[in-house]
Image (cartoon, rainbow, N blue to C red; front, side, top):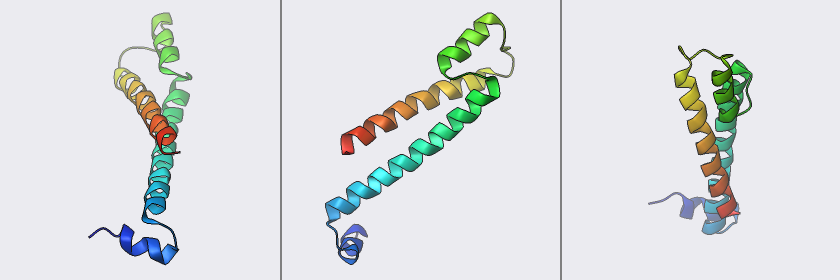
Length: 92
């Protein structure tokens, strides 16, 4: 049995409200974690986005050796951030 039906009455809110608020909190925590990783990677290379990272590659300011993993991680995190932001918009 789900804990939501047990907890909602204790908090004097509906199950739907508890589910929505719990989901919002989860998404905000996940978004902050994602943005923190993005910030750390961007700071590491002195860029603000995947596009900047790619430009720095092209200019030769960032070497390709040992940085491709970070490049793809940055790309993945930017996509994840957009997905989370979309999910937040849906539940608001």
